Image (cartoon, rainbow, N blue to C red):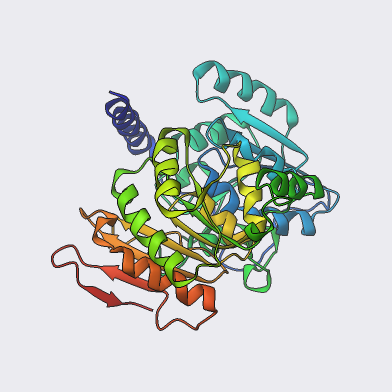
Length: 383
């Protein structure tokens, strides 16, 4: 029933975008050209989607804070990603939370109008009904976004780069152009800074005092809500058992959501791995500080690993081959990709083990991406 309601909601949102569509009459910005004439602008960024989107936006937040050290930089999150409020506060002055209800929208509309933002930036590269409504209602004189179906609501647009070839991080970095910032000259490295307290709590959660061998552990995250990305606990058991047989000195930690806790415990029991503690997202992410490698389906924890430069083996389902998966940006990885109606069950445990061994040994890859074709499960190297 929940999935039916979600599909209905998405349909209503698409219809709203379609029926409200108007010609874009603003300015297209294709090179660095500052449109803000004050060193202390009041900027609001809209990022009310998922955890991974927030982490992939950290290069933009960092660049804006460096460019406007005395400006005001606020961000709008939602109940889906408010767990990363501490992360964005490294660059932002205030975090707003949209609860995805009409009451929340009306309250925020009133409060955001009072802030008199000079600029509102929509960080999404697909049309968002929520962003459209906020942009229309906040009343800021400058509204920036990427060219797409709701572009009529912007005063300034940047081009939508090729979604089949160019990583999401680089696509949204184009939003820096209207501030006179050249994304080609910026570091677009993902960022996930940890405090000394975060690191100390992670060490305690891993029980490093009694188990020092866990420093440099392999972080295996098994949970995902996306059915085609569910690999199955049996495959995880086979891959971990083989990896431990070949590299017995490795400590391997199994992380999961509460829904998959029994599976995580069974995998650990069968393979001699240990179970990672159940923690709020930020504290769970901090465990990555002590990891040597991540193995995971395509979830937000993949971008945490990239931000901390931890190599990762990632299982991807590419439902639309015209859209590049969100690969770990700026860090070593092996992407094991299935397409269309297939699931990641097409990827055998020995392929995951081989990829993990390459990364653990620091071996240069023959390819970073492997595509598993739906028809025959055959593999082809893309990069």
